[in-house]
Image 1 (cartoon, rainbow, N blue to C red):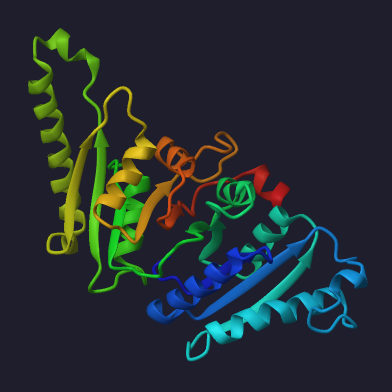
Image 2 (cartoon, one colour; image 1 turned 45 degrees about the horizontal axis):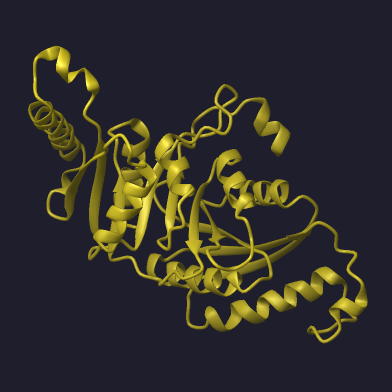
Length: 305
């Protein structure tokens, strides 16, 4: 994916929807996105008419009524935004429907809410990330739509390079945006067997990381003038997810980006330690997780399609 052309936005008819719709409108306006799909899935559309009283037009079928409710929130937010939008109201399993329509509509990215104080577990959003092939942007309820500072978690794997490539060569590549490349490292306990002090081995580890970053700059020369290398040491008692969130807040990042492993038959639900641990944190910064789209998914893909 070189550009983000199509968004899928999952709504649940709670106050979280307002934040998601506003953020989607911001992304569409700033990043010249061609089309956005707003989708809401009800387990059953056999909703008693008395529940729909006072909501738009209760004489309409439930799906049409809910569509009108959503359009009523989307239309004012997208006034003046040159992006086509469509509202989908479906019945059935939220997970299967969201994954199905993301695939059918060829969405490049899915936006989902990340509730901090509002009611909701966020389990569905995490299942979408674990089982789908499309990248997911978790938007917290307090999100302020900005893209001036972007932090990318870099462990020098193919996944982090993929995430960095998509930031630099996609619609997220705004000229004024500053990129922070975060690398968290540890000092192995084996330094004693080499007859070195902790400080000496720490210096060596930092040197190794700098060499890898310099090699990264040779692959992405555009980083030289607009990026900063953030090198953080993890101690035994530290949580890597907490460190990533703390550093993102320290540089006032408007988004934290991670490249995650995709779903494979051999590694179902495996996203990588950084992604998993960041997802466990209560974070008020948007989290964008890119997936490696060409990974094989095998029988699980057919199961969830």
